[in-house]
Amino acid sequence: MGFVLMELASESPDLTGYAVLATLAGVVVTSVFSVIAVFVGSSLQRSHTQARDREERFSSLLSSSHALVLGLGRVAHAPNRLKRTEFETLFGLHGDSFNRDLASIRLRDSEELVDAVKQFDSALIALTRIAMSRKWATEEWRIARSATLDPHLDRVISEFRSTR
Image 1 (cartoon, one colour):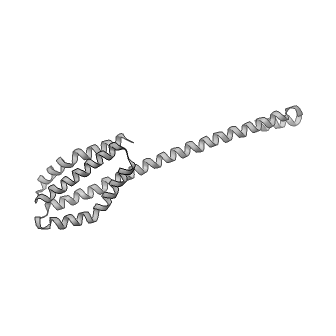
Image 2 (image 1 turned 120 degrees about the vertical axis):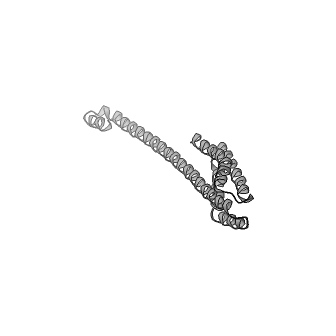
Image 3 (image 1 turned 120 degrees about the horizontal axis):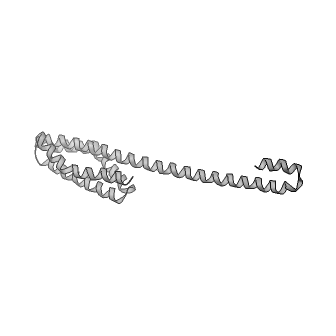
């Protein structure tokens, strides 16, 4: 538009001022739209990055808790004299990553999810006590594990999905 007016202005000197104003207006409008596009793009990117980071934190928590629960199964099936050794090995391998995942979620996620994760952590502590209490048969352990963890794990997953 500005170029057409500039060409017309060269034929008619009275239009020169209008051509300059139209060109400036075009530049201003283009600049404003560019700034808006950059702002919207960066906001969408930040939102996408935050969602991806949140999913990674949650996935890491599930992975480390799965490793702990599998290890607690080994503790539960171990003879009483070996339970302490199994337990120390388990937490030496997976305890730090689980605690790091818990801390990360507590710092960055919604109160509802944090509360659900805290209750899940309490259920894992209760399951640890159950595993240490005696030598469990496989089927008995599955029942005890499911009764202790499943409701809390379901709530954690539900809270994660509802706060996306």
